[in-house]
Every structure is written in structure tokens, then in C-alpha cells.
Length: 321
Ligand SMILES: C[S@@+](CC[C@H](N)C(=O)[O-])C[C@H]1O[C@@H](n2cnc3c(N)ncnc32)[C@H](O)[C@@H]1O
Image 1 (tube, rainbow, N blue to C red):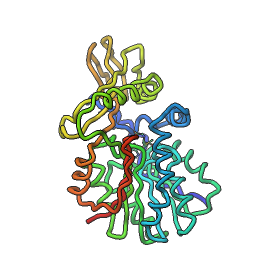
Image 2 (spheres, protein in one colour; image 1 turned 45 degrees about the vertical axis):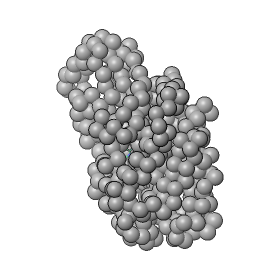
Image 3 (cartoon, rainbow, N blue to C red; image 1 turned 60 degrees about the horizontal axis):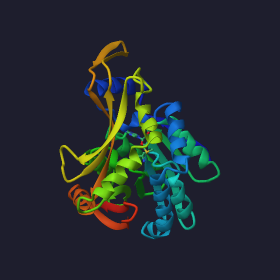
Image 4 (tube, rainbow, N blue to C red; image 1 turned 120 degrees about the horizontal axis):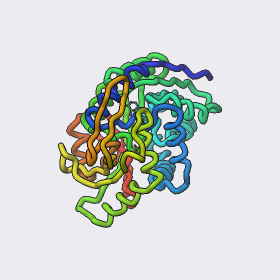
């Protein structure tokens, strides 16, 4: 079955937004994955066997896939909101195909990662669509939702896997997903959970997990579009409370300039001062009770939760209230 490709964002728009991100000293997550060099680097990180966060969440999903399937109708469209950690959606597709009629759509800004996923689904004979599109332009997901229902089944399952949920403000994520849903639809959200009380051992393990050289190299990909490199500074990792919502913990990666630096981007001159930082990426970690409150307060009801306390993982299946 052929794959339909739809383009809802442009290179020009992404470049202008990148310029603003440099000016504001905070780079949105999508830039780590754009372009073939960055996509290859991400695929390598995930397929390297020492990336434990990736492997553990995969194993956990394998242990709950049949339970998730049992909660869902027999005809359903999977709409993957971002490519998750590579082939996680494939786990669900293969499980659902045992007793359901399904279709699969994928919405992501990285055309290269979308192609990688679709090549790996080549032998799976279901309707498939790719939307090269941006999540933070909220009307896009709503449009994808409507178009998918018109072409395929009446019910959608939005999957937001990996910690994609935790690398954006919750308000934006949940509003975007909720606006795209009707009462027939489901969302499966995976995210990272932290202990209820401050635990120095957990914090240390997060810093070790996220502070290694391989991961820092991956983070440096956010600068592939401009002339900032390891010669200009270094990445460091911090564990702290969110500035706007202190009940949320976050692991943040900052790039600190070790010398003054001036770059040109899109014909603009930008100057950075020695000691200045750019927030290259962050990843939220949620205490369970706070996460539940966030999801409920934003208009969702829980259908089922799958929790792996030991590995700090949760999958939440929910619907709108
Ligand atoms: C690989 S996943 C999850 C990565 C990792 N597990 C984590 O926790 O950050 C992130 C995916 O989201 C996509 N993405 C990020 N921001 C996006 C946005 N605003 N719109 C569409 N896709 C986006 C990226 O292209 C990437 O494929």
C-alpha cells in the first residue's frame, strides 16, 4: 500500500524560527532532528545498545501492548504525534493488527526520521500517511485528525511516545492534543516519572544518564544550522525545578560560551558573551500525583495507567472528559 506524504511546514519558516530561538537563547526540540545529519545521529543514539532510557521503555511497552489493545475499539487510526523513539509505534501496530482494522499516520517535522520509520513499516499492509508538520502550530494536528477520519476509521488513537510530552510545556502539548480529539478518540502518552520525595540518588542517576559524552554530542546537533561548536563552549547538565511550575522537575542541557562569539545567521549578526548560556534542550520528570493533576485539569480522563516505578516510566491511556 502506498504512503501519502503531506507538507504543512516550510524550510524557510523553520529557519526564521531558528533565528528567533538563537536570539532568545532557547532552542526548540525539533532542531535536534532536522536534516539528514541530525536524523542519522538520533538513529545512532537509539540503536546504540547503551542508551538505557530507550531500551527500557521499549521493553516496558512490549509487556503492556496487549492490555492497551484490549481497551481500544476494533477499528482505529493510530496518529503518531512525532516519531517517538523510532519504532515504538511499530510495536503497537503489530499488536493491534492481530484483531483490529487500523491505519497509521505520522506527524513530525523531520522528513528524514519519517522516512526511516516508513521504510521499517514497508511490509505492513495498512493505509499509511505522513504529515511533515509542526505540533506547535495547533491547527495542524486537528486537521490531520479530521482528514484521517474521513479516509479511514471513526476513532483515532494519538500516540505521544518517548518523552516527547516532557520536552514541551504541558499546556501546549495537552491543548494541542485535546483540540484535535473528539469523544471517540484516545491518547496514549508516555513520559518519565520521578520519585514523590527528593531523592539525591535519583538526581545523581539522571545527571549520569543524561550527562554522558554521547548524549552531549547528540545535544550539540541543535547547533548544526549555525556556526557554534565545541570550540566555543561546552554542554552541561542540571537537575532543577521548573521555573514556572516548581512542582515539575527537569533535566536541562545548557551550552555555555567559554569565549565571546559572533555568528551570522540569515544575514543577521548575533553576539554571545563569554559565560552566557543557551538552553539547548530539557526533559521534564513528573511526580505521579502532579502528572495526574496536570492531565485531569487539562480536560482528560484516565482510561488506564501503566506504571514502571523502577524504571521511572508511565504510559497513560486517556480520553477527553
Ligand atoms: C525522537 S522524539 C523523542 C525524543 C526523545 N525521546 C525525547 O524524550 O526527547 C522527538 C521527535 O519529535 C519531533 N518533534 C519535535 N518537536 C516537534 C514539533 N514541534 N513538531 C513536530 N515534530 C516535532 C522530532 O522531529 C523528533 O522526531
